[in-house]
Image (cartoon, helix red, strand yellow):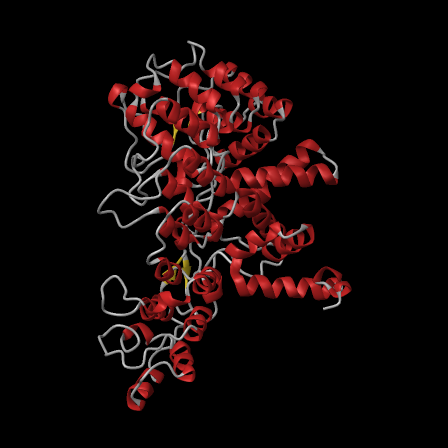
Length: 543
């Protein structure tokens, strides 16, 4: 191709159309990752997702996408909805509209200033937006009290102290210093997580309770403290400005040491025997603030090595969020680097967590400090399988260099729709498809092909067929290719027949043709948080 004919040199309308088609083809998950290609891609992909909304983030095929994109991107989507009149059924969108209009009238900003304010306010609201569709679609009764509180919250997020003062001190004001709105949270926590020290001081002066918590109950824990079964904030969401719990937790999460120090004064300090105090330490770990962690731990009167349950939780939390300094702090306290992080049923070790996230830096960090690539006996999960599940080829290469065993990773990668990784694995070792699988019933290649059929991935099917895999002669076991798994994916069955890799009785084939097609979402299997259909199968996988 002529270098001068690169995609960036296409006419703007053609470039935009190509990007729209790309987003429709690969889905939001993958499209967001492509923003790293270059600035032009970044801008156009965000425009397609946020403004044109070529795929709805509320698409039933991706029920969790709303919780997996950052609040800043979600804010752009919601801002467009608020300006275009879409999303009227979502009270969070209408709140963005009403708060921005009210703040605009009160601040009289320039157009550039208004746009910046709108984005900040929308991001704060989107941080609080429920992740489950059935939760946010229910209407919340927004009365005048909540409206006034929302406007006050918008002023707090912007750090506009004069406006906060006028809203709280106005005659007959409905805004309250200790009132909590579902769209922003409590005022003091909001100011703390956004780092507005001057507003934190003012709110405390006005009577805000620095020991009060939002959302979470606060239980006595003392030396036997342990997190509840739900884990830390939002079940691992990467939200670092969520004003949940106490003001101390919010400030620790945001990394605002000046506010933390203020809240640790005797007249404001949480009891160190309360669970919420330890959750503040966890928040500092999540945000990657070892100095705040150390400060809060010191005030308990015990070294971290004696707070074993807390230490284990910090280890898993910091690893998941890629916080190397916090992980090092925990290791320096004497924790075994191969210890299983507490409350982590999915992962067998910190290395397993890092591999599953595709966090190359953390994987190298842990390996350099002696982490083992081999899990404890009798556990089926291990780092290389976790890396394969996520499609993280570079992590796999690192683990293989350190002696990891790649047995079964082809099946794992196939079952998770990681087509690019499957291609790499087949090129790396073409003979693996002829080996017996772990049950001895099929070859690895046949098992992988059955997985590829189940998740409806034509690319992987074609790769395996090209590698010599066939289903001819495989007995009808009630599993794929002859079982109910294909009732809603006749198009995959047609592909298999066209490739000549299945034996299928013509009468049985006709019965499949008469079955319901996959319009009904209940027939659609889910992988990597995507309901797989003919429309969405390319949305699955890392690349």
